[in-house]
Every structure is written in structure tokens, then in C-alpha cells.
Amino acid sequence: MCIHTQISRQPELKNRVEEFKELCRRRNLRVTEQRLEIFRTVAQSKEHPSAEAVFGQVRKKMPNISLDTVYRTLSSMEEAGLVSRVGNSNKARFDADLTPHSHFVCTACGEVYDVPAAVPDAALMPANIAEFGEVKNVNLQFRGICNRCRQAAGEQK
Amino acid sequence: MCIHTQISRQPELKNRVEEFKELCRRRNLRVTEQRLEIFRTVAQSKEHPSAEAVFGQVRKKMPNISLDTVYRTLSSMEEAGLVSRVGNSNKARFDADLTPHSHFVCTACGEVYDVPAAVPDAALMPANIAEFGEVKNVNLQFRGICNRCRQAAGEQK
DNA sequence: TTACTCATTAAGAATAATTCTTAAAAAGGT
DNA sequence: ACCTTTTTAAGAATTATTCTTAATGAGTAA
Image (cartoon, rainbow over all chains, first blue to last red; front, top):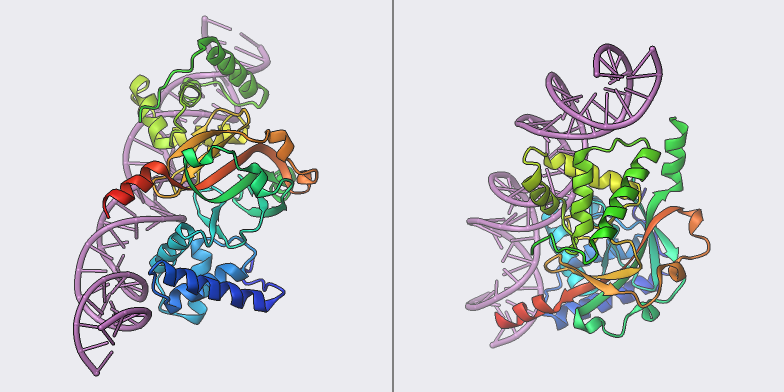
């Protein structure tokens, strides 16, 4: 369960970080080292890390960072539409991949798996969605028991 | 925010309760008054109540029920595929409506709104989903800021 | 019905996740 | 470099959820 699985093309990360800086400036959010490092961590991870996991990772480079900062930053990043909050066990998990894809969420262990989208996000958006509010992201999730948990449950019987 | 908005056709509720009893028996779950009352409460609500809200409601009829029982019961009901866990703020909310529909989840206030589905659930299911696990329910959510919150934010500027 | 067994419950303690408070530090503009 | 305003770290506080334990009650078989 390491959360620093590297993305193949490193330039892409740089672009995303630049884009992130740009967006911060546009929104009058200050570009701090903490924000950059947190963003990098989530953007590099494919594990949908929890705040705690991001904290653990960022702490390696910034030993004084506080968990609260991680929470605050992840929330503001969600608000800015830079990451999305996925899964819904009682522990929040985050995803910086905003390309159309879905998730299988295990209700037993809370794990979140990427599922290639059957239907592109745009196609899912109802025409009247603006009546409700401004959509920051679309999230299709399949909830159930993952095969690993099913197997584990079977074994102990 | 009352959670006991009545469903128009009362017979439907009775059917659902019977179905619920049946399912309990099939799964060797005991049919207790607590479970029935909790199920009725969620099934009658259109507000996607939190565990706390269900607790408050059920307590009117069963003053001694514990919050823990509500949590336990809602979890086992989710596991049985009788309700789904919706939204994902840090407070869990539940929905007994399993017909195809989606949700607008406000990331500011945590409110969950029903959105009529643009695409039926079945159409969303990828062919290879079984590779991940057994799906109990499909949940399409649009996350963002609801109009009420947007308005509220605008006013105080 | 009655007794038996095991799941379920209430109560409240415990834990886990998240947010708040405060004073100090740092960003971005002057 | 200076000033203003955000942002931060630290740790306390709060909120949500789960665990522990002993007592209760559901289903079952006599």
C-alpha cells in the first residue's frame, strides 16, 4: 500500500504543478511549499490516499508539517476542483486523476479501486444539473465487497 | 430538515418491510424491533438521513435505543444491499431508494440532493466489474457547491 | 409452552477522524 | 526591506464511529 507510485511521464507532473500554481494565483491562494508538496503527493499517487497517508508521505520531506494543514489543503484543493474526494467510508480519500474513470469502493475494507469508465463523464451529466449547483466533479462508484475481502471472509469460515 | 417525509403510497412501505424481514431471515439476521424501526425510518425518509438523524427519529418511538445500534444496523443493511451510503462528507448518510437515480453532493454543507438519472444504472455497469468484486449498488454523484451555499457565500461578501 | 442457545442490544467508554484556536511565520504586493 | 493578510504548527477540542460488557430477546427444538 505504498502511496508514491510514480506516474510514468514525469513532465506531466511538472505541468500539473504549474497549472496548480496558476490556479492558486488566480484564486488568491498563496503558493506555499506545503501546498505544492501536498499537491505533488496526491498527483503522484494512484492509491487514492487518505489525509493521513498524504501526511505520512509529505512528512518525509517536511517533518514539521501538521496533519491539520494536510486536511485544510486537501479541502481547499477539492473546492478548487483540483482533486476529488472518493469512496465513502468514514475516512476521506483523495484522487487527483480527474480524467473520466470510476471507482469500485469496498464497503468492507474501504479500499478504492480505479475502474475504467464505461461511459464518459460528460455523457452522464443531466441537462438540468445547474438547478442543483455548480458541479466540480463527477464520480461514479460501484459499491460492494471487493474480491480480496470476499476471499478473506470465505477462508475464515 | 425533517426526516419523516412520508412516501405517498403507504402499501409500498409495508411491502418493503416484509421484503426486509424476508431478507433478514434468509441471512440469519434476527428480526428485531430495532431493525424494523430503523429500516422503516430510512425507507420513509427522502432526506438521506445521517445515523444521528435516524437515531433522533427512532428514539421518538424507542427511547432506549442506542446510537451504536443505529450504526450497526445501518451498516448491516448496507451490507445486505438494503440501503446505500451516499454523499461523502465525513458524516455518513443513507438512502433506501435503490431505484436508478443520482445525487448532487454539496461539498460545502454536505447536503445530498436527488437527481433523476440521465443514464440507467444498468447501462453504467462495466462488463468487467466482477473482476473487482460483488457490486451491491451503483452510485453516481455530482460533487460541487449547491446553489444555496453559493448564494450564502455571495451574500456575505 | 418452556428451555436453550446464540445473536443482538444498551450503556457508556474508547478510538478515530476531523476541525478549531492561537500565536508565530511567510507570501505577495508596496 | 516593509506591511498586510494568509497560512501555518501545535495541540486542544470536537465530532463521528466503534468497541466492551453484561443483560436481553429471537429463533428453535423438545
